[in-house]
Length: 83
Image (cartoon, rainbow, N blue to C red; front, side):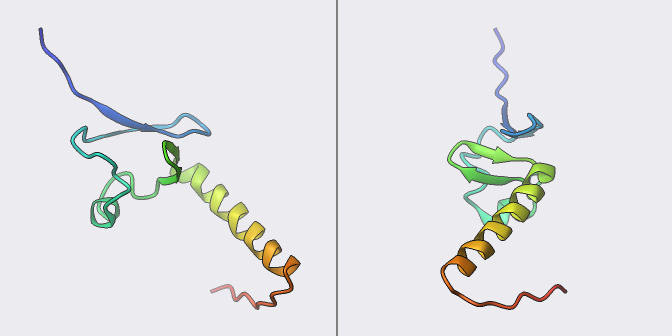
């Protein structure tokens, strides 16, 4: 009998999948591995929760907006510049 070891990361929003090396415990724990890999645009939202590049873009946008609104509600005044 032959055993094939495989590992994958699944997007918790849309179900997209990317195969990873099964010997890597967590691809998000090493910034060097993460930067040079196929999953570099994926994000780990929480332990065991991941978003693909497309879903991560929307998540980051909503997160920035919410953080800005929380700062404004707390009375913190900031000026954001678009580059």
